[in-house]
Image 1 (spheres, rainbow, N blue to C red):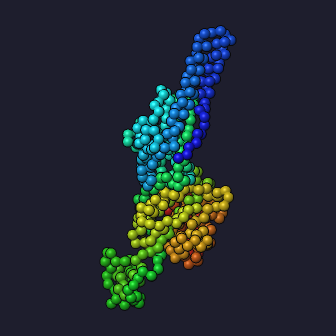
Image 2 (image 1 turned 45 degrees about the vertical axis):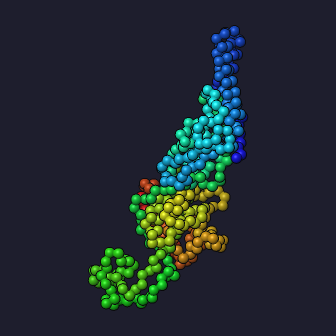
Length: 419
């Protein structure tokens, strides 16, 4: 394992302050010929000298152990708001094993710490510092502040004096991928989804003709597919009947849920944008849990890919969406569905034969966005439902305006929901 010395032991703010006091004490003592000021300066100089030399010596002693230090996050898949746990280990170097004393001994007032630093694309941060020599079995817990895919290109092994004068930092490279996925919790009440679609390739029995003959009907009982209810007959008789001669729709519907992670800066600051995208993901997960048993559900988000799988895998996929500026600099990110089909990427699932549910935050502007570009590229016959979700009164007017604008687009059903 490679490592980088971030800095030679260097004075921090407090160190500069003590250095200044030392210089002034010696100068005043020499000018005024006062022994007390000279002794005072000598004490400060001694403290600074010990801090500098102690930090340097400990850095040289522990330097050989750094390449063999490793940290493994025990569960890279957790729920947002819970605690993560890691395992610190040393191998092949001096004093190998989990936790335990860091080899080479310790100097009084000189500390050695390991720092785990993780962050999401929308700048959520985890910074966890622990003493490797004080761990029981090498295990340490840390708080996960919220939903997200947390990355960290390197950890740090720090050696510094207790007064904070000097510090040496060794960088320990880590994998480039997400090291921790904090999945959202599901919203309490899933909203109804009306855009589920599917084909007939899975039905093998004979197809029957539609009939209005009362002989081919029977009373509705709980558990019958509501899609077989004859609503015209209900309007006349006032009771529910199901058609016996009409085939049920295919047992597996196809649904693609897209998360529009762009947050309008005119309505949301960074913290509000993160919370807004959290709401979208929580409600998307509620829809997954509600419909995944009878539907083939895929998840996608602005600037990311399309993911499928079971409910747990889709929950992990919902850790990745991160709040993005509504008008980012450079080339804007697109929905994966639009870019994938336009580029003919065969490895991604086809989306043109799916019902599409888009969860988005209200926006105040009418400039083109990933949502607008997707609607222009979709198949004209493809059904799309857009839900603008928000909290509080602030975005209400913008949400109402968005609904009226997008309802004018063919094949689009738009709604706003205050949570």
